[in-house]
Image: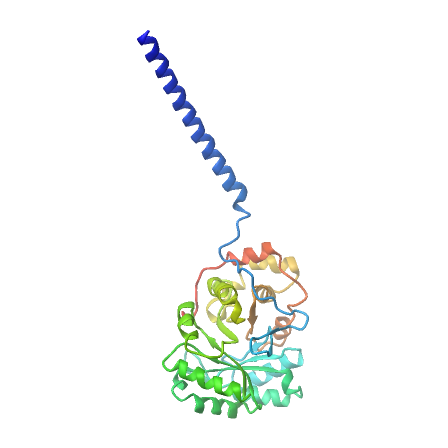
Amino acid sequence: MEQENNTVNKLQNIILIIILIISIIILSITVTLCAILTKEKLPSKNIVKNPKTFDDINRRVELNSQNYMPTNGISTVLFNYYICLNSIKTALSNGVRLIESAYIYIKEDYTLYMNEYCVGDAVRESGIPRNEIFVTTKMYPHQYSNPKKAIEEILDFLNIEYIDLMLLYQPGKDDVKAYLKMEEYVKNGTIKSIGLSNWNIKELKHFLLKINIMPAIIQNEIHPYYQETEFINYIYNDLKDKNIIVQGWYTLGGKGYNTELMQDEVLINISKKYNKTLPQVILRWNLQRGTIVVPCSSNTQHIIENNDIYDFELSEEDMENIANLNRDESHCGH
């Protein structure tokens, strides 16, 4: 009898082991199938969540300063005076109303471009009412120690009554001092809105504790190979109540990535799908992520095309396909 009981127990143990093995196999198969079936449905880690919705009809967005800013424009980086003047006049005559400038741009060979002169001339000579043109400029770190002088010089260079938006170019010594001085000019109406350029999340958290007027705009390098998704999500989710807007520079990749981007198969296929140019697709992708764009061009046809980005919308699938191009590769490394 005892031998029979042992035999029964052994059989029961074997059966239990077999059942356990089968259960593990079934569980593994189930997990694998679920992973396969849901793989394509999982959102990319690079997707911007709840971006700011822009007014595509009027091509603008309301800032936290209660001023309206166009959602696309033209940058004047590394243009000499005559190219700058002609480019801005071409842009303005074709409906562009946002002009991006700075106190100074420095080329690799140390050639200096002080384009505020030509921006001012172009605005005055355009025949367009001043309040219909939005002019952005930036103060550089070497100016932070004497911000009043810097602002007065910029106002003199532009000579267009007031500045629509002034940014601090990047963090630096006396950046808070410079920003607080800009706040004074906001209060007297000489500067309509203020903001920052090339700040990361950590820098921004510390900086916002030391100022009174929230930045209307924060401008960073943004393009399909450097998407700043975490930063944009931080602005539009964590700081939602501040109503800060994101703007991108080098939106078409700049000198570091433009050539490669223009040859990217994913972007080429998407552009064919919508019968749009590849730059138009990139600019539209930015707008749908809540990013104001200021591409740089001196080519008349390109300037016109860069402004023609409001008559189509990228699908969620195409937005995700572009999101998956992200490499986190910054040109300047700010």
